[in-house]
Image (cartoon, rainbow, N blue to C red):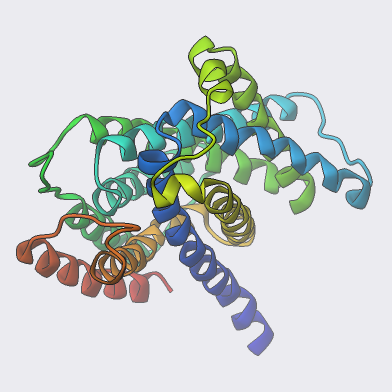
Length: 309
C-alpha cells in the first residue's frame, strides 16, 4: 500500500524538481534573448539544433524504432516543441518574463486540458479540476504587466498564446506515444525531431548572417559571458525537460502541465532577488501593486497544488 502511494506521489515530486529548474531556464532565456543573442530566431537555432544530440542515446536503448504512423506523431511532437520555443522567445523578447511566462503557462494548461480530454480521454476529479482552475487564475494574476514599455495586453501575449497551443500539442502527442513505447524511446525520437526546427530556422538568410557576425568583444556582462550562460541554460533545460517529461509519462499530463504555476512563483521570487541584489546582471520593473498581486498568486498556487494531489 505504501509503495502504491509513493508511486502515485512520485510524479508530483519529479514535476516540482523539473519546474524549479525550468524557472531558472526562463530567467536565463530572458537574459539571453534580450542581452546576449538579440534575435529570437538565432537563439531558437541554438536551442533546437542541439536536440539532435538525443540520438546519442540510441546505442543505450537498443536502437528502438517507432512503427507506422507513430513516426508522424513523433515529428509533430518534436516540431511543435521547437516552434513553441521559438514563439515563446518572441513573446519574452517583447515583454517581461515574470508576466509572459505565467500567461504562457496558463495557456498551456487550458490547451492541455482540452486536448488531453479530447484525444487521450483523461478525466479529472472535481478537486483536481478545482486545483487547475485556481492555478490558471493564479497564472493569469501573474501575467498582468505594467512596465516602462507596456501597460496591459500587448503583442508578446499573442505570441505566448500561440506558444501555449504548440506546447500542448507537443505534450499530448508525446503522452500518446508514452502509452505505446518505453520512455527513453519516445523521448529520444521526439526530441531529435525538434532538431528539424533548427534546420528550418537555418534556411533564413537573416539567421545565417547573424551567426556569421557575432562580435568578438561584446561590452555587456551578458554578452561577454554569453557562451557560459547559454551552456548553463541548455544543461538546465535538458534536465528540466527530462524530469517534466518523465512526470508526464507516469502521471496525468494535464495535472503536470497545470503545475507550471509553481514554476512561475519560483521564477518571480528569483527575479525579484536578482533585481534587488544584482541589477546590473538582471533587472525587471516592479510596482508595489504588482508585488502584492504576486503574493496573492503565490497563496493560490499553494492551494491549487494541494487540491491536485
